[in-house]
Length: 321
Image (cartoon, rainbow, N blue to C red):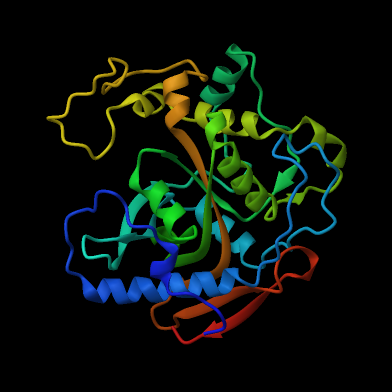
């Protein structure tokens, strides 16, 4: 199998397993998915940046090509009434079998360029913050999460394997994105090594916008995460100070700061920022299913080959729908 290990070898058994789910069909299907993701990712070269600090170095010698599917996907999202999508991660059940875990998330833009609400800009300005300059672009999907959610640990234990599915009803198109998801935003020095690795992987998917090279020294990771946090309403910011998600309500938190319904204005609240994370999905395979005309359905697949940087390219294949 070309040196590829079974997916179970990539997943560490958690200390407390969830309730048993006897879903063997799902298990087999997701095992196959995880295998495909690992196989695709092995072709990626191990390029890295020189530092985990803000991106102040000169532009990388190699940058990923612009994906041929991006403009159509962007157009579909901009004309759709909803931007929610489902993401699936790999988990283990009580028997140690790989099983799917799917949830609905909100699309937060193409990293690192979320569409900022006016309230976000006001919040940043009122606290002497500002967004990063427009330096980078990518086709990497971004979302936000609470580090206490199960998806974060599942990504760590499965080699970052993820699949995202958008059903955009208004345009009659489904988009399926397979790849790896990386989590950033940990303010704790104890997590510096993990944060560094995630930043380096995300850096591989960034392109410097034409004519923006001189602004790179002004761009920082910390400011980017703060901008994502500011783009939430005060109530959503306060949700990162909720009691631990998924724990029984009979277990009352001992920390008095953890409670429901808080409105948070402080963009640097230590408790909320300690739980807040940005997740970035770097795709290596994308599929589009066009059902806008049921008499003439169409389907395409794009697969990233050739590693990262200038040598990479997207191979397009038209499929039977």
